[in-house]
Structures are given as C-alpha cells and as structure tokens.
Figure (cartoon, rainbow, N blue to C red):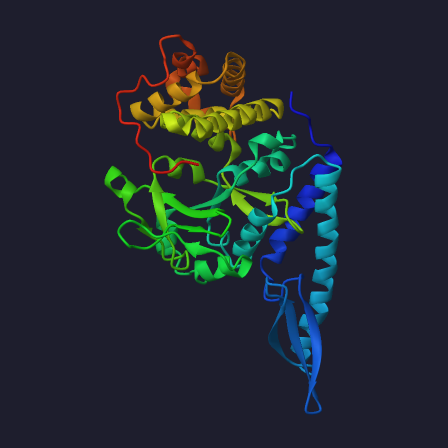
Length: 394
C-alpha cells in the first residue's frame, strides 16, 4: 500500500495550485525581483531589478514614480510578493513534512521559466517523469523517489493547437538561456529545425507532438508555430496521452502551475511504450513498468479505478496494434502487479459511470473480456511481428 498524504497537506497543495495559476496572469514583474525608485534629474522613476542568472542584476524600466498606474502596480506587487513568500513556505512544508518530493533545481527552474512565458497557457503539456512526479500531490499518495528521478524535461503540444492558436512563445532558446546560459540547440541530421536543447551538464529539453496519421511523419520534425521557433518530434500514441490534460503543481520555488496527462492515461500509455522499447532500452522499459504499476496501485487505492478502466478501453478500441502493445506491456508486469491491474480494471468496469452514462466498457461486455488476454501464458514479450521501431518515448 502506498502511504496516503495527510489531508492538511493535500489542502495546502490545492491552495498553492490555485494561487500559482492566478499568478500566471500577472508575470510582468515576478516576485523574485524587486521594485527600486531611482532619482534622475530631480525626478523619480521606478525600475525593476531581478537576477540575471549569473550572479548579477538586470534592470527593467517601469515608469515615473508619480504615475498612479505605476503606483498601483507597485502596491499590487507587494501583495503578490507576500503571497509568493507564503507559497514558498507551504511548498517547503509539503516537501519537508508532508512527504511530497520537490523537483530538482534544474528541472524546476526550466519549467518555471517556460511557464512564466506562457507555455501552459498555450496548452502545452508536461510529460514524462516530471509529470509523473506531480501525481503524488494530485492523487494524495506518496510516490517512491526512485521512480521520479530524471535528467530531462519533455513537453508535448497537439499539432492542431500549435497551428491554430495564433500566438507564440518568445524564442525558446532565449528562454532556456535565461534559466541557464549554457543551453544550446541540438543539431539535426538534415540541418533542419531542432526539437531538443541541451545544457552544459547534459540536461535535455525536448518538444514532442502528436503524429498526424502516417509513420512517415515520425522522422520529420513538425513545425510548431506556437513554440517560439522550436519544432517538435511527432510520436505515435501521443494524442492519447495528452488528450484532456489536468492541472497539477510542480513543487519548486513557490509551486508552478502545470498541465500534465491524466494519470490513468499515463499508466496505460506507459504499458504501451514499454512494449516498444528496444532491448538496449531495458532500463527505460523497467522505469515505464514501475511507473505504470505505481499509478495502478494509486488509482485503485484512491478509488479511481473507473478512470483507469475508461482510459484502458479507449486505447483498446483503437485497434489491433494498440491491443497487442497493451498485451505485451502488461505481460511484462510482475505477477503481483498483474493482479493489481486486473483488480483495478475489474473494479473500474463494475462501477464505471461518468455523468450518468453507461460505462465505456460496453463494447466488450465486461472488463474481464477486455483484460483476459494478457493474463494468459501465451502472451510473451517480443511476440509481436510488427517492427519495434520508435524514435523517442516518454
């Protein structure tokens, strides 16, 4: 059994999430800086100072001190900064006393920087292990730290959203370099637009998108008008993962409001991805399976089995290739984790309701029919005759 996060800490996290989301609309002057009044030729002006990331300060002109609008801005900032300090203390309490895990400094700073620039406002979704780390607070259970360690940050945006939103981030490379000047674009083989960036310590930031229906697109970075000059790597199954994302809090600084995949979708997606790992990616495959198993346990424990059942059947109904991938991924789980998956799906299928509608499991008759195949000895890892090629997985 996973340990439950105390209700007081769950309440604190919800408060941080709301305040962090509110702050996303007032980011001209972040609370990590300060207003200073400077006298120039007998007149006073407001400037805004903040760290340049290299031990110095950068100064931004604000306006004349006598301007009533500027004065209101400074007054509002004082309240925002006070709120920011309170949130930092709450985050510290959650990670120190509440048993929740904070993001590492590099990951937190990158996500915070991109969030402030509007990344999640443009419906980009944090995916991969950083997203998994937010589920502890979202579900109210404590996650094992070993399943959350990472050395990269992955972000996914639906191709259609990027093409139609008619808005864009500032240049991605400039944003990343504002967090860490050592960031550089990772060159592509054909010299085209990049989908990834890396810093001097090897920390990688990558942008992903949904596949547009043909495998030929998998090797061609997609132009993403909303991503500030970055392209994105199309991946199969990504549309399933990032459909209907949920709001969560990344525990860094004063808390960063982010969009992440629904945890039930994440669990099913990890089973699918595990089935497609090459033999030389055994460590990543094991991590996929560990994360899927933990989420199944968490969803069962928090009585969210219907969510897993619905996500599972949605994936199953996408056809034979999806069914085979799920079967192979589930077959790689330990006996104990298979039992928990079966228990979660059967419980979810028995009581699945969403807004009074009949459960999505209708087309299979019962959840037992859906899950029967991967609990039989005939299903073996590597039994697929389909190519196991994949460019990148989360």
